[in-house]
Image 1 (tube, rainbow, N blue to C red):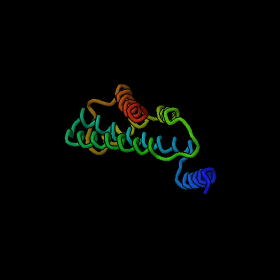
Image 2: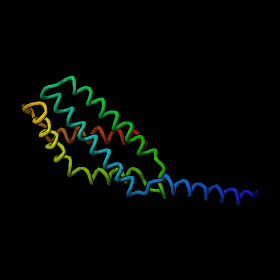
Image 3: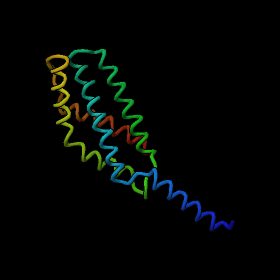
Image 4: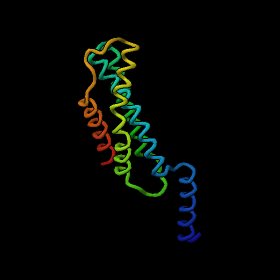
Length: 145
C-alpha cells in the first residue's frame, strides 16, 4: 500500500477512535469541574478537622485530597480529546466556573461537620479557599509543563 493511502487509513482509524473515546472541550471542562468540586469538599473537610477536632481524620482526608487531585488531574490532562484545544485554557475556564461556588461548598462542609462531629470553634475562611486554589494550580502547572 502506498504511503499516502496508509496515512489516510491511519488518520481515519484515529478519527474513529477519537469519535468513540475522545472528549470534546465542553465535556473536558465538565469533567474538570466535577473533579474540582469533589477535591474542594475533601480539602475543606480536612482543613476543618485539623482545626476543630478529629485529627486522625484530617490526615486521611488530606491524603484523599492529594489522591483526587493528583490522579484526577493526571486523568484529565492525559485523556484523549476530540479536536485540538489548549488544555491550560480549558482548565482555567473550569476554574472560573467553579470559583464562585467554592464559598458555598465551604459553608456546606461546615454545616455537615456541625451535624456529624460537633461545634465549629475555628471556621473556614477565604484563606482556605486561596490555599485550595494554590494547591490545585500548582498541580496543574506541574502537569502542563
